[in-house]
Amino acid sequence: MAIAITDFEGLCGFRPLNEIKSFLISVPALRKLVGDEHAKKFESAADGQDEAAKKQALREAFTSLMESSQDDITAATAELLSAAESEGSKFAGYDESSGNAEELAALLKRLNGQFPNDIGLFVLFFLNFVKLAPGEAMFLQADDIHAYISGDIMECMASSDNVVRAGFTPKFKDVKTLTTMLTYSYAPIDEQKMHPTPYPYVSLNAKAYSANSSATLYDPPIDEFSVVKADLFKDGAKATFDPLEGPSIIICTEGQGTISVGPKKEEVKEGYVFFVGATAECVLQSTTGDVFTTFRAFCELSEK
Image 1 (cartoon, rainbow, N blue to C red):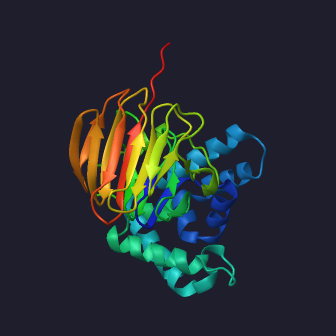
Image 2: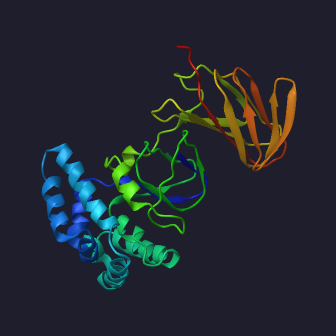
Image 3: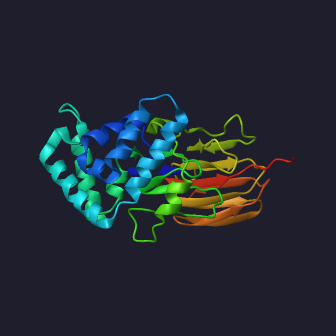
């Protein structure tokens, strides 16, 4: 789960198939890398009703793209950037009334400046491009594809035994593993954005007593973790959180204050991290006039 701290841009999951199909028709450089045979198979499957066939066609088209040679990627990048420059508001199949063409062209130029001739420039046409304002969030299921482009986030992950990279990185790229492990699920980006709620939440056995503060719950559809963002708005503002039936990790991203757990009280500053054990009341208090912001990741344990 990624919660935006600043304005954020990223790629999150595969686009709806009709959007990918449109790009395969309207962006010749992309179609060349995917290959006409795979592109035609994908277009046919995208128009059909067989869900398994759709995912298989998506997998084959994406794998073909990812296995492109560097020479082909370099040539296609030059063609892509030339089209972005010359086609203006009609680039990538957009019509003149849409501002998306100019935004997409500018994004491609920016990314190519950071990672020249990278396959990620073309993966962009397969994935949802998402913008998040501070406080907004998105959630990714295991084995879904994503990339962070710009901005600061608070990221929370369940335990994992792998990080597989394939583009927009100077680190090792493992294309074979990535293309075989993905779920190839696809959906509009709105389905992957989260809908935070005020904390406490009815499904959680806890309360937050607060003065001059707010608490927001980010509760993804998994059991491994949830996150509470707490903002204290003035000097002396306090938030008291009842015990949780599980451990927590708290990190401060802005301001200064204190944290009290039982008889122990500690100073908190930006970047400080604390562990809070299960069944322990936790009190946060601001000690300056600036906003004091913390994120608390937790899980609640249940007896079986």
